[in-house]
Amino acid sequence: MAQAAPRFVSLAPDGRPQPRTTFGHALHRFLDDFFGAEPVWATQIGFHAYDDRWPDTSEAGRAQRLAMLRHHRARLEQVPEEELSRADKVDCGVVLEAIEQMEFSDATLRSDAWDPLSYVYLMGSGLFGLLAREFAPWAHRGAAVAGRVEGLPRLLAQAREALVGLPDRPVSRLHTETAARQLSGVNDLIEQALDEAQSRAAAGDAPELLDLLRTAAQPARQALAEFQRALETDILERSEGEGRLGPELFAAKLQRTLGTDIPPDELLDRAWRDYEAVRAEMVRLSRELWPQWLPAEPMLEGDDEIVRRVLDAIAQEHRRPDELLEWCTAEVGRIEDFCRERDVIGLPDEPLKVTWTPVFMRAYGGAFLESPGVLDKGLSSYFWVTPPDESKGAEAVESYLREENDRMLSLLCIHEGVPGHYLQLAWSNRSPHLGRQIFTSGLFAEGWAVYVTQVMMDLGYRADDPATLLVHWKFYLRAITNAIIDNAIHAAGMAEEQAFELMIEGGFQERHEAEAKYLRARLTSTQLSTYWVGSLEMWEMELEARRRAALQAGAGADAVPQPRLVGGLGETPGFDYRAHLEAVISHGTPPIKWVRRILAEQAAAG
Image 1 (tube, helix red, strand yellow):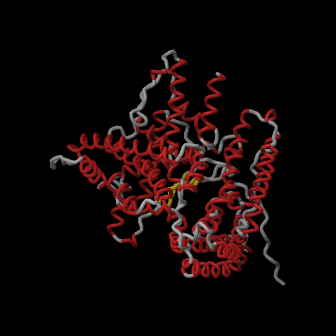
Image 2 (cartoon, one colour):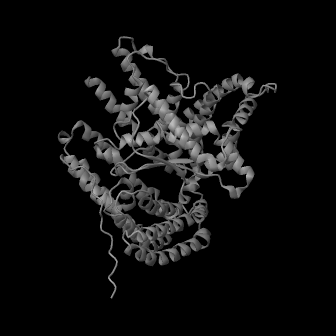
Image 3 (tube, helix red, strand yellow):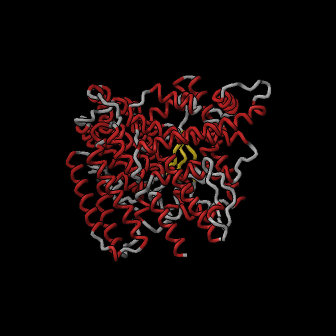
């Protein structure tokens, strides 16, 4: 009788530091339960004891998660304040806010009931993370993949049972249609796992896992096919919603995403003011650039037409689709060289790979940075570039390439790579404070990436090419319009033609970019606001640091000018840019308000 293939046994260590304080023990106990309830998140963080499991997405599982979150929130709130160090007070605040946000998601937002795409993302993330990074031997990762593939039928059955909508939020048709288009990416990952198992078995590495995966794959494929049919029939038939949250729910989610009590209307008013200010700067630059880029043409009369015509000329300089990855890899190297030469910031040692966005993530468009979990040390980050969809025809591909022209790609390499997400998250993973490492703030991460792109312009990256600065302001204008359409679509019912007019006519975007962003704005909510709002808070931190430095140097706070837009502050007595940048990213990735508090306290303590 053949011996049964071994089941999953974790071969990866628990990378968490041993708790030494009352808060540390309370956090450790919470993470034990939290990782068990959210095993895919645990894999992404770098805790690998549950790598073979899916979360329980049934109604009973949701109730158990909520009970667990409420229990640990109460436990953490009861930690005596006198037993909290200054660092623990920050971590405890960060963790409590994260728990409250998760309670809101499970109890109020309830995407499990109306968003089929959330399941596609869950499945894709749960398999991709095991295949893409060698954090443990194949005997661990392969068995974990087999366990998750085996668990897919149960997960998909729970999804079909849950996707019936809520009284005030029916299943979203857009999310259903998009999920149906992206579900094949999960099958692709199963095939990738089988190919990996086969090549490993041929080399004598855990050959028993090949049969285990083959056995699990057949019912998983069948369950995926049934879910595909359900998406295209009965789930689609009851998908009467649009996925728009409405003003009250959007405001509640935005407050938790941004960690601010500023009303959405107030943020929207500020966004419109900045929108006009950036457009005015683009007009000024375009008038200066016209003779260089369009020497044979008389300058047009309308401001918008001048900007658009100059940007059109600049957009002619772009890569072919098959050149995008190689070009981005080389550009990251050029940016790193600049940072070394100018002593901008300490560069990470962790490897970065530039590669195509996995299929299951392509609905969100654009470029992404996928970093290793905080407990996985020394592993690769992935700079994902979403390729143009050639099935849409040559005109759409050209529109994509014109939007992502050479100068825009350069800015994306700063934003996603160095000194943007890749560098910031590598620094974050060095922090000794576990709570703010694990429960990261999108406002901090995206705000940093937008902010530091402007810093690179101020420090002179590509300073010999004024066209890059114009494209940079277009990039920044995109962040502002992101926030406007995020708010207007979910809280004010902005129509497609209004969104396109804002992005294409007002924001000078290519049609392809506007279409992708309109889709993303309806598939997600509040995330698109983090770029611009986060960058504003980053600039406020820099202004505070400059004023402190000027006062300490005896120059007075008025030595720091009020910026006309953002950046462009020049020299400030006593202010060291590298010291400031590294101070900002040395504390994990918590909500920005906590970093402002830390830096202010450190300055006060001398």
